[in-house]
Image (cartoon, rainbow, N blue to C red):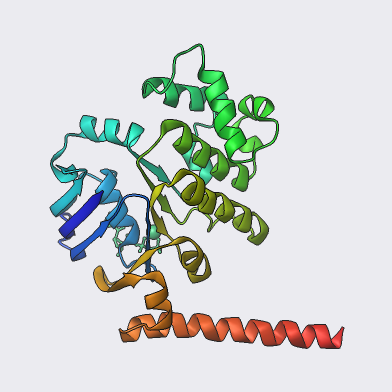
Length: 270
Ligand SMILES: Nc1ncnc2c1ncn2[C@@H]1O[C@H](COP(=O)(O)OP(=O)(O)OP(=O)(O)O)[C@@H](O)[C@H]1O
Ligand SMILES: [Mg+2]
């Protein structure tokens, strides 16, 4: 569905090469996770794919989405593609909504702009989508303003919007990082459902390797703007090849063991 070839991203203001000649692809109905330390170029890569980078950021290479090169598209064409084909979910749900509009106003505007339904059935489409992500009292929710919802509810609303739009590719950039642990768990469950029940195609960026292991089919690992390793998710976790992958996965295992020991110790003391 998506094929990125020799993508290089450069900041023309200071000449910095942010992403260096990376290639990867995503098949329909699969989830690709992008993993790597802070500043490694994960967000820049997905911004380049969706055309959301700043004008002084220059991209070279090819991003083929259903055989169309997205790098050659006009701003307007990209807006349309983002409207109904590629949908982005960011870390902070509040930034995605206009604070002066109710959830219903924003949601219906998006649906009508993208011709996903008629005025007559916009409300029932929104309610059906909100019910799919198990949000209770959808009618009430549509009347609320973004600040009246929790971070988890906003992220679930974003997932509902992507469902209502029938987006072909969902790009989620650390969608659970700003949430507390319990809410994180619930939102991750919704993403997993998106995959299982709706066969969504997804790019998922996360620092949390536990979540990545649950949700992704394929992983690419980035460091300093370069792709250092890639492979099916279990292959990367069980047989990491590069020293960086070994380090990341080893650290996670150690943390897990320390945590278990600590919890076990506490339980014994209790
Ligand atoms: N708007 C921008 N203009 C210029 N350079 C940028 C911009 N945003 C990010 N960068 C640079 O691009 C590099 C990669 O940033 P990016 O945001 O893609 O990292 P990331 O892997 O998503 O990190 P994190 O895990 O912290 O989100 C950084 O070195 C940063 O300095
Ligand atoms: Mg980022």
